[in-house]
Amino acid sequence: MGRIKRTGAWDLLSYVYDMMGPGVAFSMRKTRFKWTKYNFPQRILMMSRTKQTREVREALASHLARRLHTSRSTAKSDTIPILQIIFRHKPEYAARLAKGLDLTEAMIKYLAGPVANDVLRHLRPRRRR
Image 1 (cartoon, rainbow, N blue to C red):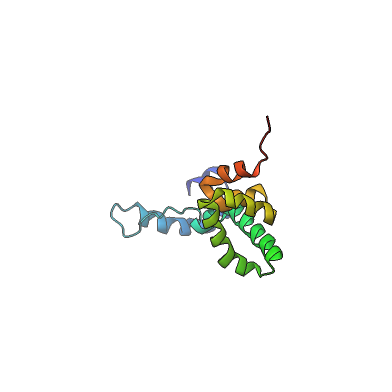
Image 2: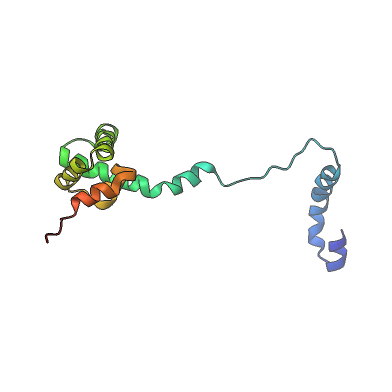
């Protein structure tokens, strides 16, 4: 009401009763209404964080499906987990597989995980002295 009188904006009068009720109700010290802090949806946040990994996985599945004459879903569910085990435990053999399958560096890093540098080191040609 003070703002209406001060500024002369009488079109705000329709909101006075809407604002009066909750204002009085929330001013009470002990109330059953609690303030709920809203956060950004966790699912969307997780999807944005894993977007690059999912893109590499999809590209790898498409690439393997063409090379191995299977579907992308079969490549994702059957082939990629087996390749991940090979790439993480046998870097030298993984390097030969990567070369034979013509995998990109991002695909190798996805499959090898923490030992990706070992696989990439086996891929690079050795210098002759």
